[in-house]
Length: 125
Image (cartoon, rainbow, N blue to C red; front, side):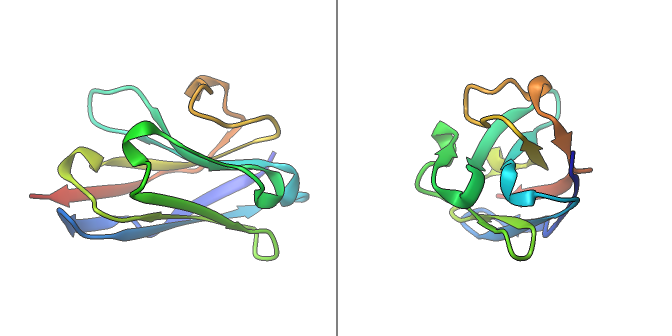
C-alpha cells in the first residue's frame, strides 16, 4: 500500500481552473495505478480520472472528458489533476486513489486499495 496526501483544493468561480496534486509515500509508486474520485454531498463517490502504471493509459469519467487532465511524475511520486472549465456540479471532495490493479470508470469505489484524506473543491456560480 501507499499513503496518499492531496493538496490544491479550494474555491473557484464557474469557468475557472484548479490543479490538484497527490503525493504518495511508500515504495514502488510506479507499480500502482493512480487516480481521482470525488464525492458530492448526498451522492456516491464517483470516478474522475486515472492513469496507468508508467502513464501509458488514461481514463476519464464521461463528464470530465475534455475538461480534466491527469498526469503522474514517478520521479516525484506525484499524480496531478488539472481541472478546467469547472462548473458548480464539480463541487465535491476529491480523493486521490491508488491500486495495484486497474483503476477505470468501471472500478467500484469500494474496491480501491488506498485513499487520501480528500481535498475540498467548491465551484461558485
